[in-house]
Amino acid sequence: MSVKEYIRAIVNSRNRLNPLTETSHNFTISFNSGATRISEIMVERVEIPYSFYAINSSNNVLTFNSGANSITLTPGNYTATTLINELNTKLGVAFAGQAPAATFSSATLKLTITKTSAFVIDSYKDVPASTASYALGFHNSTASGTTATASSAMNISGPNYILVTSTYLTKPLQHKTMFSSATYSNVFWAVPVNVSFGDMILDTPKLPVKFGKNAISSSDIIDIQLYDDQKNPLNLNGLDWSLQLILITS
Image (cartoon, rainbow, N blue to C red; front, side, top):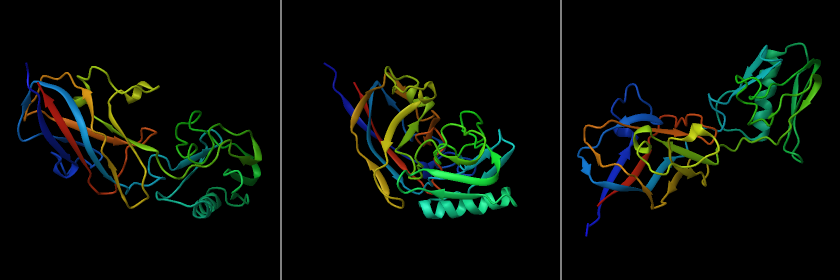
């Protein structure tokens, strides 16, 4: 009868192999020793600082008229009021002389943009460069006109969960995390975001995953990435995070 052994493995982005070229949300590590006969792996604890912005370099561009015009929002966290101010500033520059204006309805949570000449607000699915369209509620491109109201409520609260991914760690998994999109095939764990900006996101799932890998060597290079729920890189703005694993051998 085989006896199971539990080996704790701590991953800290601060100890990434190439700190000058790698970021805390996309890095590689190696352990100081190896482990053999690994049959399962357990995510014991995840600690991620909520230092990322709801509007960031991956979702801050809104394009118009099939990409002919665009505005770029300053990365950061916004309230409805501060976002309207930002939109009006950027719209005023992009469409000077056309009296552009953005308003927000607290009753519907929808954004409306107007100006004197007809325009179209592009959705991301029609114009991939329009990365801010989803957060601003423009899930579909608008019809040409002088007034455009978003089809959906605005969402500037940030991601609902964080995806921890690794090509190395997920390659031998017998049963990978299932998503409706194949782009998530390397997801190792999904961490719920249940705290406020500035706090520490803690997750202690302690659920085993059938690993199916025979060994991890100290010379192995292990890749780790963080993404938001739209599969955008999760920029922690210079802060580090940690992942504690338990390797189960038998």
